[in-house]
Image (cartoon, rainbow, N blue to C red; front, side):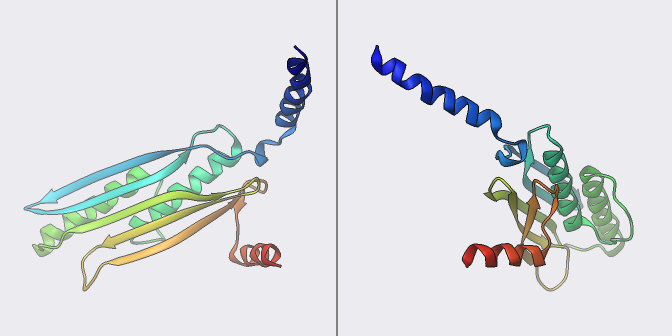
Length: 174
């Protein structure tokens, strides 16, 4: 009986600490989304394979981060940055139709592929880092592979610029 009474203050403190936590201090929960689409023309194919996190929460920071993730994925498909693309699905369709037009015009046997695996690699109360590991082959002498980080400040609801990231790292390592 006395042990139960002894635990009550800890339970109350735990609840009060949780409720005082700001939304921006909590980790954002994500769910992996898979987007896979392919178009073939006379035995040659173009393939898009994307695995990426979508933040499940309804907070403004989550919505903005999801938009940034989708914009980054669009950039992997986009040939002409001056042409705005409305959505990830339309970027995929544009990429596949570009392949179809190219393969019909030049009767090529090249297989086009854009593959991106993205995942949340680091998260604190203030920041989220998403790693994009990409591979692409759109014809030419060799494929391209890149790794890129998208760093997002949850409190400011904006991307962390390179200069600010370096300042943060210097502050942490000092």
